[in-house]
Image (tube, rainbow, N blue to C red; front, side, top):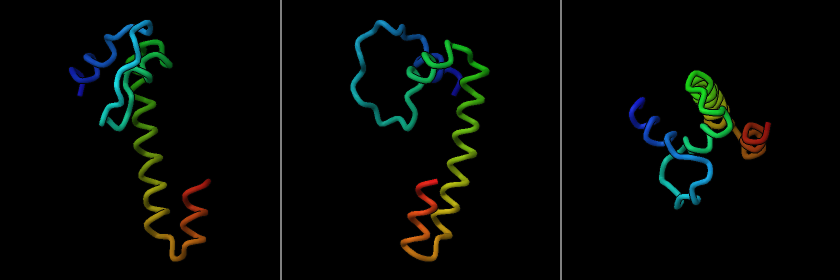
Length: 74
């Protein structure tokens, strides 16, 4: 992931917007908002991953449509 992250974060903010990617996270965008701080990028991605797992479990465990809706919209 490190080399992949480096490839995406080497772009400058003045570059023309890229075509939509199939990547789940826009690492260029993340880099801009973290001012290129790799430790902060990693922390944000770890938080995103952990929180995603929490929401997925809530959705999987929802016994009804109403409960699923409540789990999807915190």
